[in-house]
Amino acid sequence: MTDEPPLLELSGLNKIYENGFHAVKNVSFTIESGLLVGLIGPNGCGKTSMMRCINQMHKISSGDVLIDGESVLGKTPADIARKVSNVPAELKASFGLTVYETVMLGRYPYLQNVWWETDEDEDLVEDVMKKFGVYELRDRPLNMLSSGERQRALIAKAYVQEPRLMLVDEPTAHLDMKYKLEVMEYLNAMVKKDMSILVAEHDISLMARYCKKCIIMKRGEIYAIGDPKEVITEQLIQDVYEVSASVGFDKDGELFVLPKRYTGNYHL
Ligand SMILES: Nc1ncnc2c1ncn2[C@@H]1O[C@H](COP(=O)(O)OP(=O)(O)OP(=O)(O)O)[C@@H](O)[C@H]1O
Image (cartoon, rainbow, N blue to C red; front, side):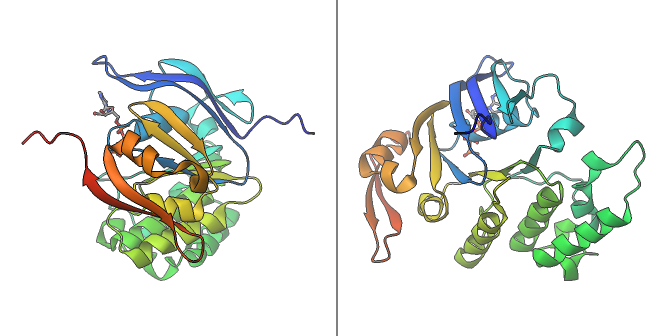
């Protein structure tokens, strides 16, 4: 038995926006080291809001987020960035930066006082660009890459940050099936004993294929947590999405979800 705290612990987390909307409702769970964890749920159920509370991009309304047993409350952005890196779903305008400059940004939490990267930073960035297949693209601006190339560069940036936890928001949106699998292979390969990844994603079959644990949200609350092959059922899809679906296993034992019909009311 070890007394080590979990890598990530959310306890009674609430996020209420300034307009009074309660986006994350009393959420508690833990994530251990060395796991790729899928975060699943309908549009607007609070996945991004929750992830932004974890890395303090958003102020927590109440409750706490602990990383390695330490609260994120009161920590500086650099303190948090040494523990948590982020691959956002949408790119901001600043991403006219080249691939090299973008990946190097991942080292900023480690730079002392001045913006002056060391030889070690440069070697690490070069190695990681090669690992993620973006070395040849290093002088290209990020906004002139294909979606798949850009996603690899952003994941490389998050990786050179050497975090304990990586938050990845909808990494396969806009990607074809080959690139979807490629991104998931990269994420899967990165999860090491001392790091975990929380990935928000709408493709449930893909999550079931790669994640041993998934967290399912509905209207700001946790609806289920567990092995996707156990928790994802036709009843769950009906309850969470109001969609009738076939959920089955293929001949290799991989779970698939085939949505058939929306059973709620359309407002046309
Ligand atoms: N700054 C804000 N002020 C008020 N409400 C907000 C704000 N940001 C998000 N929301 C609302 O909070 C709810 C949760 O949004 P969030 O982006 O966290 O959902 P999501 O699960 O990530 O959705 P998606 O899958 O569509 O990305 C939504 O109803 C959204 O409109």
